[in-house]
Length: 393
Image: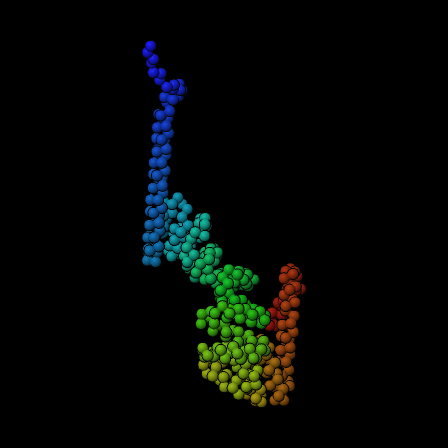
């Protein structure tokens, strides 16, 4: 009896089995096609990006010598990038500025979506150009963008922004900028020097001394150090701190000869130290170099009074008040000199004027506060006008 070999059982073919291979091939082809599309897009984007970047590089190179050509190249770079290429847009603005097209420059800056992507040195340069040309709005926009970035240009941008605020008599805004600058660039000495100057101008000697010392603590460059130390020495003398003033002047005189207002402050220090003859010698040296002015004549007149020469003092003090009749100290000292020479009638008008100005000085702060609180107060405004007239403001 013969037995036939049975073949192994095979699962029955499904209806779609025969079509699975073509489906897989179709899917592969689709992925290959999609990959080719993506590759083409990426290559196109890279090529466009490289082309835009090349145009930008060339525009920067041409900007100093041919701003018109630089502007065209920068515009082409922006167009190639789809209209959003902050670096190239800024170079285009700088080229327009170089050609004096300020309205177009301002318009171009308004189109830059992210100034944070711009070169901060170039923002600072545009801000500086705009300030030199009196284009204040453009300057502020450019400098604010530069100040917002941590970079080597940051302090320069803040300094120009402060100058801009002070130019338009906005001391509160300038002070706020300086404080922001101090926080954001803690090693910078310049903002402390500026706030020291502002406090000194407001006769806030304590704040001025503190800020000048903060500036010196940051080890500024020699020129700035000399400037700050000069100011610190002057305010210390004005505040009556003779020992501290002497220390600062001794340090200052090691690095530079005294001149101008600093030399006059040194004369005042010598007088406060009771060194009247040395003070007279120093003031004579100043007059020989710088000529006479109301302050130097007043100082020499006071020193002459100190050494018992009222007749000579009168000559200097009369000239001083003629040059600046609003100098309370000179008016008072002239009256004193007349009294020492036995001329009370000549002293009287100067005593009265000195007293009137002293009273006005005490009253004006209160009246200014009233005006700020009630801007429409006619009486306060009238009082303020009268006090300013008495003080020659």
